[in-house]
Image (cartoon, rainbow, N blue to C red; front, side):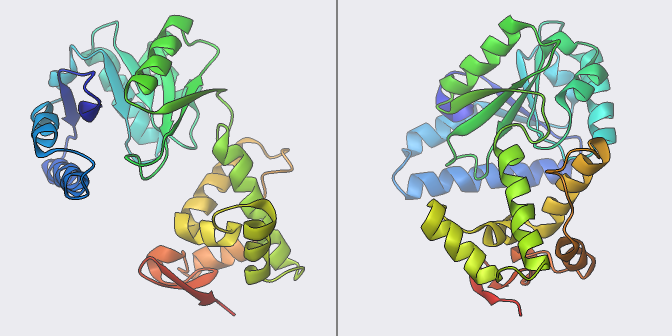
Length: 274
């Protein structure tokens, strides 16, 4: 938002100083990388950083127009945060959650202002990925949704509209496909390598589903699907493959642990695990 030129001030709030410092460091390094690659001038970088106020004081959010929340996917944590924000912020403030798997409607209720609540789901790495899913609930004011949609365009991203359905558009279609690939391995119908090569060469995917699951983190995949299964036990697309549960229980989480469906050396993928 600060880099887009549409905001005069951006406030980065984090109650814990160590995490605030870590976030500031990450932003500074990300901007420095853009400068070193010639994608941003040093002048623009300095101007961007100059617009950001880093604070541990929630009261500084009192007069903000638009708040994007990106805390971890824990509904209790989000409930507490939105309850506080609902009391601190001016009545016109729009709340936008970057959740990828939790219910926007449920969080909207915590805020005390469901009409001012939307989802804005960014994709990692945010500075490179253009897509943003803008989520509305049955109670979202259409004018609020339009403002959120326009804001996404103004910061140079491509917005798409979706209702409050599990996983929104991308993850709703993608994650069950990853689970189907794992079920095929479970049943011995095809190998990890052959499934991934097939989806790359036959469907034009940049990486196969099991490679992608490893890249995302098998624990993350498991967390998302477990939540869906609990909320929607009768939805046949939401299943937890045995191989996923076994690997997560064994601490084989993919790229981040060096082993999942493949062996990994940092970000470099090796051979499939036999």
